[in-house]
Length: 237
Length: 178
Image 1 (cartoon, rainbow over the protein chains, first blue to last red):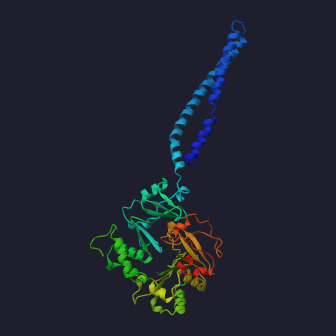
Image 2: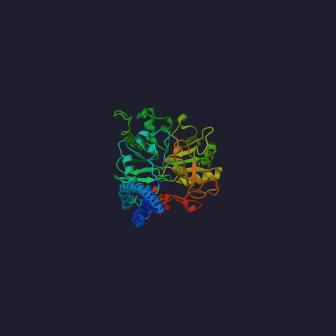
Image 3: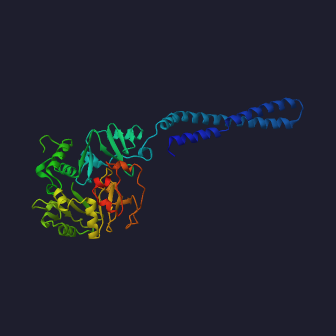
């Protein structure tokens, strides 16, 4: 059980079940009865009522100690609830829409980050590259806090101007927006080649140079993106 | 647009070339079979990389450029993959066109196709199918999971790829979307 709402509900149930008030009332009544009995039997010379009253007094004292302990527990639970409830109420007031409200979400695969694109990075028909300095982590935190807009007509999250989708296991992937660049299949392949050649068009991997799917325009687009790569030097390309 | 089809690793790259050249009259010299890094010759229109020795899964890859698209009469990846899988009695994975990197289309030897989810942790090395988003008739052993209710967001036009033997799926995506 990790949901704060569930925890708060359990604490409330325990507080309700704690018999503090009833016990206190019963104990007070028992004390008053014992006093009346003591008054009525005073001077009779019988030992039995005196012994019985001593036992009752001891019981009342023990019950009083237990009541003090229960009161302390109640106080602590109430203090905990006071901290928990505002959070729970905030959650209730702003439910997290979309996938993030249904399962834990995880950051985009590293192949999306420009500086992590490698020779083996899987290529898709469309590939969104995250440029360095783009606060994807901040976006994810905002999504988790329920601060992102969920666009039901597009089934995507919008946060800080960036659109994100969510895969089956809860992995977030970048779609479009500031700091995100969309490349088609051959452009992304050209980018991988440029990264491998550290921007030197003369030392491109021969497999890519021979690739019939990669054309001049692809290299140009890839070069524009490569300018943001950590290995880029202005004299490159 | 270009074509990229990832055939089951047991597929003969040579046979892929033979079928394509025979069916579409492509000059075999322009459809290379082998490691492209070792190629030197005229500008290719397509190539087939055989699966490396011992490679499992889907490592025999056909890739073609714009001239290859023309040579095959503008078939889509799905159309071509279906045709070749039936002809070569094999199966293949192709891109499903969406933003979710783990969702691919499996094409089987009987001409069926449908979406499967591959292992994201191994995706940069190999295609390992974890589950299917609908039953796969020829591979009932693949576990089936319900697609998430936000799957529409994976596709820029919001159109979820269909599955099955339906010949309508052979239309180009833009037509099928309408």
